[in-house]
Amino acid sequence: MTKNRTRYAILGALTVKPMSGYDLKRFFDQGVSFFWAESYGQIYPILKQLKLEGLVAEATARPEEPSERARASAPHPRRLPYCITDAGRAALTQWLSAPAEPQARRRLEILLKLFFARQGGRDVAMRLVADFRAHHAALIATYDATEARLRAEHPDHPDFPFWLLTLSYGQRVSRSLVEWCDEAVATLAAAPMP
Amino acid sequence: MTKNRTRYAILGALTVKPMSGYDLKRFFDQGVSFFWAESYGQIYPILKQLKLEGLVAEATARPEEPSERARASAPHPRRLPYCITDAGRAALTQWLSAPAEPQARRRLEILLKLFFARQGGRDVAMRLVADFRAHHAALIATYDATEARLRAEHPDHPDFPFWLLTLSYGQRVSRSLVEWCDEAVATLAAAPMP
DNA sequence: GCCTGCATGTAAACGGTTACATGATTCG
DNA sequence: CGAATCATGTAACCGTTTACATGCAGGC
Image 1 (cartoon, rainbow over the protein chains, first blue to last red):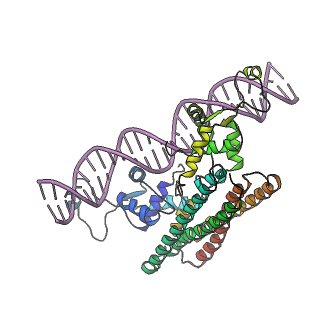
Image 2: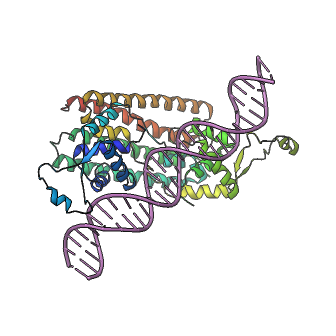
Image 3: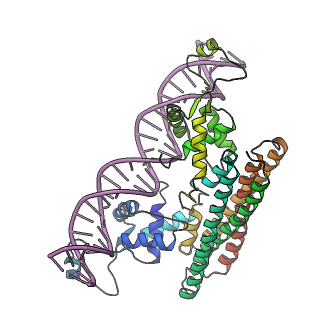
């Protein structure tokens, strides 16, 4: 319907495996946090809504068959996982087919600050760039660590090549930005400042 | 006070030259749109608020001295420019000194789609990447054009080096992403897909 | 006078985060 | 038992976009 992308983030996550709201939060926090984040305030209401629309359903753990009474004995359904339905898969692939909007919000605070950096003086600008450089250097380290872990643990997962691609995106961008920081330091050192 | 960055975007813009709300909108749309955007719904209310706080003031065009009666004869003040005050400059430099938050929102739709791209099939993924590549190739062209225009028209502006730096950021990132797209195409071509 | 564009503004809706409330479970 | 943690949920708030309302200026 709308341009709500959280719906599809959840639907996509449920193609990996059935998950509860809590699981989904962990998935976003630990799995894809560097390019996508969700909060409980989004997850639970939208999960409920997706259920109403029939795009997800309560998972009836096929292999273990938890039995009706076991389920009924839990008054407040704890950790009830959802799975994606056929209709959900259809909605997901339809969204996948639509062109991705390049970037929802263009707000790069570092560039806004640098654009006006002459007002703050050279030292302030230098520290700004140094912090930014350190941030991306640290990001590269985590990307590399994640890649190593992935190659060791899930080299045969069918989605493995796609996971590597998202990591590669982060690695390339952060490497570029480290280089950009070095350029910026040189420029700032040479620029006439108050 | 808060983490409202629009305030500082406006204050910073007013260090370039005094501007009205309309001018500010054009400044963001035409000047820095690739890394910062603002809408009227933000600009006018915050401008009013900044005025109340004494961080900006109605510009009393010093050089031309529009005279009291000329100003009074305009019933609805048309295109009334604001300029930054000393207090405004102080607030701006204070904000500049604070470390920049790396990235407000982490939502890269292209990566979310690619992460689940196996669900959509190879062709869909390929087109996704192709569109993304075309987008960044076009961006690079506009960056290069802007850089050429800047070098021709404002090579002596004191902020010129900083403007070039923001452009360089965009150029480096988009060039990296074009390369990433080529990697992605190769990966997708080789990956086993439904 | 009338139309088009300039300019200022605002109301409503939206997407999202934060902080809190609540109950259930586990373990010392 | 009591404390910590797990898990679900929600209300309030915030920043932002969108769409619209208004009114003035200049040209036909």
